Image (cartoon, rainbow, N blue to C red; front, side, top):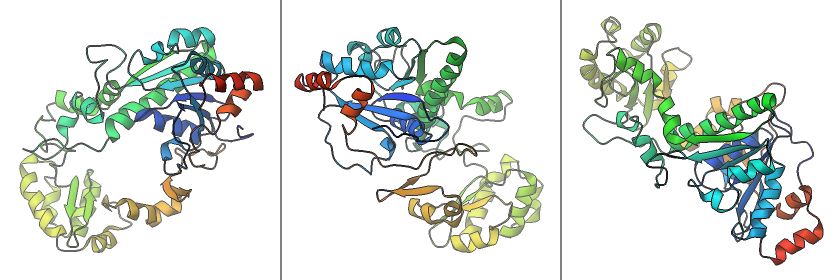
Amino acid sequence: MADAARGGPLEGLKVVEMAGLGPCPLAGQMLADLGAEVLLIERAGTPAKDRAWDVNNRGKRPVALNLKTPEGAGAAMTLIKGADILIEGFRPGVMEKLGLGPEECLAANPGLVFGRMTGWGQDGPLSMTAGHDINYLSMTGLLWMMGEKGRPPVPPLNLVADYGGGTMFLLLGVLSALWERSRSGKGQVVDAAMVDGVSAFSGIFRGFAALGAWREERADNLLDGAAPFYRCYECACGGFLSVGPLEPQFFAQFVKLAGLPEAHREDQRDPATWEARAAQYAEVFRGKTRDEWVAIFEGTDACVAPVLSPSEAEAHPANTARGVHVTVGGVTQAAPAPRFGRTPAPAVTAARPAGSDTEAALAEAGLGAAEIAALKAAGALG
């Protein structure tokens, strides 16, 4: 059954998420983290195993339906009628083939916000083409900028397109549409495309380029690893430090504590000095272990921090003091974010086995025992 009082700023918000991969699961997780009731519609036949490991599905209510049957699609529509938001990440046209496209859903629920998440968008020459984070990112011009000079670009995991340009813009879109609905009373379709979202990140670099302050060559610019004061360095122990004192006052502290020449403060931003100084700084940082450098810079504004492994990040005092991570079902994971002073997020609960809430969710949506039994007999339920 649904939690009586989940709490959180999104308590009372009802979301239907069509199970998939990439941005949508994280979007649904974040909505659930902040108190929304998220019904996760999965395929009938999904194994009902313990899945505390499945962090992106924590806090959701799993419903298993066979959407390829008219009865299963009808059961999904029953749930959608009671939702504020629907999010899906299929290729364009898949929801329409199931009879669950925007036209049908908005006819049944005029206030529904129908969030659509794709890589290329709902239209355009690539809209029906498969792809992944690296492909979408590569088409925005930003992947070109990542990596070492003279070497292939380096993919930044799947953080930028899937989760930055995807999840975050889907959430921005559906919550913006909800705000608009509060005035108009009408739902609408939100077309969130990763290429659109990632491209929105590029404003600062396009501005720099317009001023002649950004070059297209990789590792030739202020923020792409060329500047000796904005990059990572290896230490004597094999660990790494991140260095980023961009502002003159912070760079002054960095120079002093690292034992570098005071004269470097005078021409910090001169690219002609960067290559030689990067080699010089690299040699300096190889002279001590990472932890020795951390002790030197700790508590200062020199903008130096250790590059932590995932397990080190979980145990670091700064993260434990803030409660950045929680352990649920034996799995350490990020705590809900952001944080709210008056309506804190509810306690994190592990992902439940597939189909756990199928019958309960349908009953809460208004179906009687006989109707649910008929759906079972028709093979519509998991």
